[in-house]
Amino acid sequence: MSTAKTDTLTARIDPALKQAVRIAAALERRSLSNMLEVMICAYCRQHGLTIPEAPPNAKPHPQDALTA
Figure (cartoon, rainbow, N blue to C red):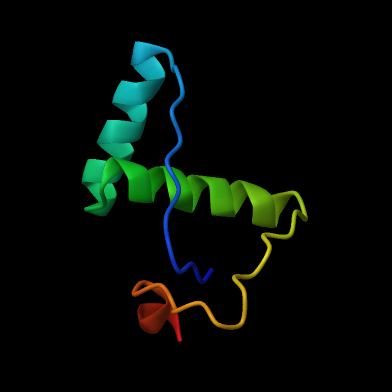
């Protein structure tokens, strides 16, 4: 997934779920926001949802270099 910029998402979540995501992130050596991104992408793949691509003039996300 390529993105030129990130966007802010503010959400309320049950404290137990937040702790579970923090633990998952720590186990994967990821930041909390990156773990959420990974989980959302996995959900989309499992349910056949397409994540729109970035515009052609957008700079690639640094994480994409690791998967290319």
